[in-house]
Image (cartoon, rainbow, N blue to C red):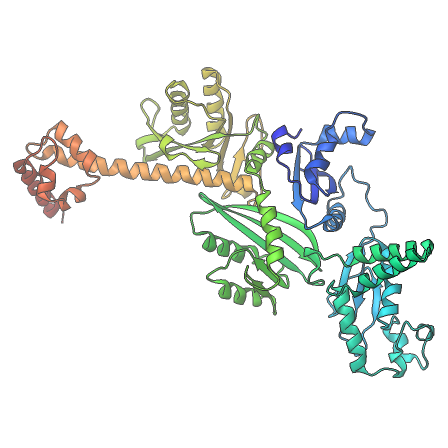
Length: 592
């Protein structure tokens, strides 16, 4: 069931909402003028239809796509229902697509027709529109104002005399040379402006006709004109998704956060918004560099559309455009300052900001079958060099951001240095039993396989704590070189796609644990080298050695330090400092 906080934070904008079940499968798609009000209405107590009760029992989550207006939501809803065929939607029985107006502008004498099939044939398409009746009524009005031909090309070429449409003033009869190409083109250009929503002359004329009919008490004619007026207004409504109809385009928005970037892409195909995808990419790079790198990889294996619109200007945008043109000639890469890109980018940015910060938490809970959404995550790794100086490390994430002040190193005291499972058990036992290390984690991630996972469960039972736990390790057999996840009480590993945000986040956290383990080991090695060399220097006892280890990180750092600097340390003097420098200089010469 969707929690109250998520319901309260749903947007009040128009768009499409998708109910998902516990397996993250879309089970219902709906549209609304206000997404929040509509979704809330499902959960109001009262009389409900049987299918609504069944739907509510299976809802586990909701996701949304914002649109520019209700009509865009209507069209997107249709596309999503066709694509996902949700269980609780009444699917279209004949799977018909919506209708569009087609103007064959490449012909010497362009024709206007109604079509359900949008092709990349050089024609202009205006639509799609959900009501066939509205389109046909509109066509009658258009022909009385802009008398372009309606006939098919085969009929046009064979005709020897004008058809009846010419006789009633709804065609200029270009088929028999009744109008020259220049004059015909002038009519077509006016028609293009009107269909693009640039000319409101017809609407103003109809308003005048409605007022005149009402003044003459001809209410039947006024009603007819009013119906036509509203039909036209619905058809010419400007929409973000249809400004350049017939084109395929991807519109991207990007946002940089600490250690990652969030991206969203709106996919328009033949001018229709058909899908939205969100990405969460771990990255320490500048947002522009990370975004550019991601786009190179993304389009290496995917269809390249006619246009790609980006919310940010990239330094290497010309290079990216050149690379994409090798795959699709004529591709246009547009930034936020390019003409016509602003509205599209604003819609993408709105959708980007609708990716709630709890989405990743919820995805972890669903995909990993956790008992609750994780706020504090601890990742554990065992580190040693050929059995020497074994240690366990703990890195901490809160809200999926690293808490470096909470990182810890556990030097192994009891377990054998060649028994990784026993070492992991020791580290977890010390962590869970230390009352000074609170709060406890919501989720524990182990770098290891089934053995480490079983050891962790045993430790938790003994300590009477119950965090969720998973492990990540290299797979076996065909998956030998790939990372796989192990969950408690599950025989086979959980295989997630590499593109899964959950999988990427787990790998990112595991890699941070590796980085900290390596850094900690190098720090220990430097101190080990330092402590093994210093006791041989006259006048340097345990206390002075501790001060040197605290102040300097390596023998080289002491060698490079000025005598006066060493002499200023508490308990040191110039004579001791000179002896340290002399001894280290001799040691360095003997090693060369």
